[in-house]
Length: 343
Image (cartoon, rainbow, N blue to C red; front, side, top):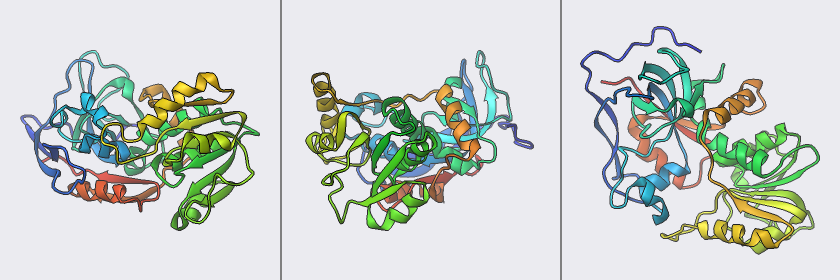
């Protein structure tokens, strides 16, 4: 879709008010602030996007905190390499650099790019796609990372389909809210795990059955599942394997601990090491951010089979509050930031 009346980047415009991060910290308050940044130029092979909204996800916190330490080769060893930890966005193409094809000024797009908590972001053409028709900028901005992670976890690694029984932990979160809907759209029977306050919201996403982990051990019953997608859980591999069918699949996409070195990723590593010796398939993956996946996600969003669950849209100036609110665990679905025009 092409926007009408979207202003081009003003000649001589040099700075923009964006979120700025100069050090690592576990809480966003005092770490993220707003300040001036240069407006990036659309260099070779890049597309400059005027950001209308940005998404906030758990990965935002990892980049901001530099935790676990395993992320620092990417995020920066001693201090953040990027101006801010934003990654997903939706907006309008403002300029197209030499060699960048497939997009024109005025196109409405969504996708991923570095330092997206800002009025402008530079993106690779293979990391963005046309914004889904009928979806607002804020809702679209929440989809690229969480939606792609859910799609790959449920469909590609979890083999969801008609007749398959899936258990999804962390079903009320950003990835979980997409995973429940995608699994149902593929015809799977979905059992979703969440806390008491979030059960109704998860049920509204289409889960066939909901379990309250605060009131029962959701792994203690007689039920067996073809796939367990473990997003927010931190249960042991032994417990998770116990509820799988003899040739079931365990897909670990989350599970946070306080460990500063690995932060819970040791479970993923052990699962991959054990898998070759078992009839069951245990594993994890790193979500791929690419335009082909975004277009597949767009088809689900435009059909109405999947919708972003947006808990709140906050102004860019409240980015720190948004990250801390997500970290505190009370959010159902996603948070988005509304980005005002550049100065």
